[in-house]
Amino acid sequence: MSRLSPLPRLQDQLDAITARTRTLVQPDRLAISEGVAADLFATGIEDRILQVGSPAPEFTLQDAQTGMPIRSSDLLALGPVIVKFFRGRWDPYCVTELEVWRDLNPLVRELGAISIAISPQTRRQNDFAAQQHDLKFPLLSDPGSAVAEQFGIAHTIPDHGRKYFRSILVNIPFANSGLTYETAPDSAWRLPLPGLFLIQPDGRSGTIAYAQAFADPRVRPEPSELLALVQR
Image: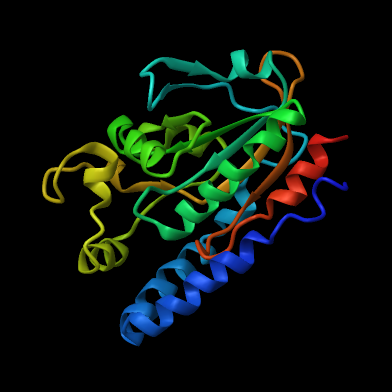
């Protein structure tokens, strides 16, 4: 635990983003954003998250920088796998979280684990994120949040949420499919909850050893909680 004790709290950094946002964004727009999160929570999605002890879904997804398929079974052959689901490079909370995991990557490797990040973005968008934020772990594209669905954290943005994102010029369909608002299918409006999972090697697919995700995108799991489990 000594290597984990000095870690800064991720939530403190996210709360600072929230505080800045409240000084810059009009209250009526903030209310819409908070309403979208509240509506998502009301669906009970947090109760459907894949539970600790469950077999981990097997998946094969394209890596942003190499274009090569990455198989979960191959990763698990090397050690525990930390899976970070993020919404997109357009989300400052996701970017902050990815940068925290970037800084923790040497410790992750020292512990014998591997980090990956998964989003519904196109490979091109994930590659932009990797280069802009100097991310050294694989960023994998999950079209239509199909793998996120297997982890119990996928959802489709409703119409009022789509109007909100359009009003703040966040083009989620383009990020996820390269298509315009008018031509993108509903699958391009699929997002994961920002989720964090630890898969321990156990046969081909592995077992879920940590699982946390929240409907409110301003709240994220603390890395120290998961890393403490990797050490065991």
